[in-house]
Image (cartoon, rainbow, N blue to C red; front, side, top):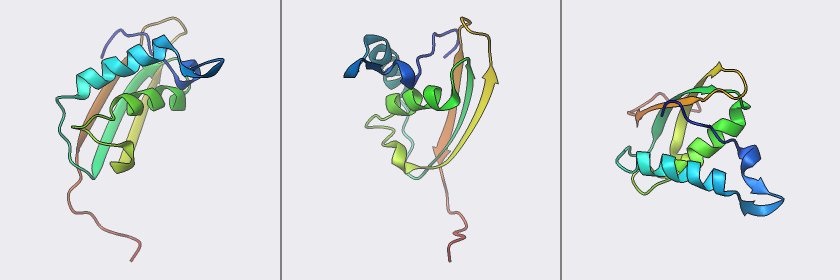
Length: 110
């Protein structure tokens, strides 16, 4: 997604725990774009964001929007890499998400 007005989690609530229309619309746009994606758990994601917002505010709405039947829940993401490119306030941002199913990996806990 290029040249979009990014919405952060700080815009999620409108004085009381009801999501704002701006947050809902952005989340739905991400949901529509990720419906065709079919990545089985466990997953690895690499997210590039051009944003003025705090990184956690930007990423939260992206992960919320990606929770579709085809993609699954963000609890299935085992590796997440985020690269942020700061931009000036008022500029339009962009999002790039790359992902795949993790194959066998070394378990360091044993």
